[in-house]
Length: 280
Image (cartoon, helix red, strand yellow):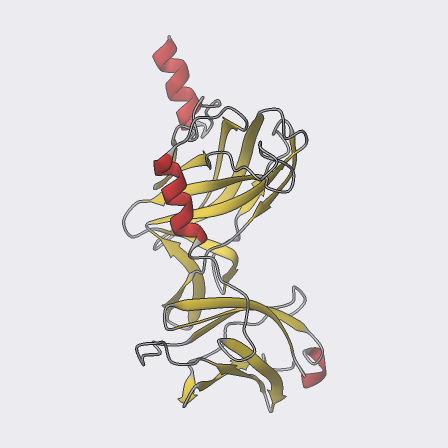
């Protein structure tokens, strides 16, 4: 009987809270998901506080050949959705997104994660002196030649008194390191975005790395919801500056994009930055 109940819960994509810094894996079509909570952080005053918060993560492991998507999927796919409303003693949760990969399939460009991705979380407890139960209901795409929308739920306990878990902390640190940073006016950054003819031209600075290399530069952008646009095209590099172009759909005048803001990730030389870019 117990085995049948457990099998039903796994098939439905739901498990109960694990008394550890990692929930059980929830198996879904061609992937599995779990929740992570880092060892409690402290400040000079002692226990974790609303200022220090709690770190966590949503860990999605994919079968070979399958992928899932960034918060803006690109030309195809579906953006992930995470609902934490079933959590206890949690005031707010912020989901962070590591730098995705650019995936081209014919004329279609998607922004994806392959193999495994951890979406780091910033968790603010309602009462930092008490434990939290973090629960997520997730909806996301798992795709290869076909794309499957999947749902999964998991929960995990954390907070004061939680034992240290170096393995979880290490995994979270790996993906925190893959988050894009802030642009530097003298370093990696998008300098301008201007309408030129039937395209938006993005001018970016991608300085060489300390070893003299620069790597291949890429620009991935989330356009305003009202504009059905694709992704910037291949770069043209001259020195430390790189030029990208994003074609405007036929019938979209320049006035439709001028003054609009794009949320972009610029990567190059093993680095990445995220910034809001307004079209002039």
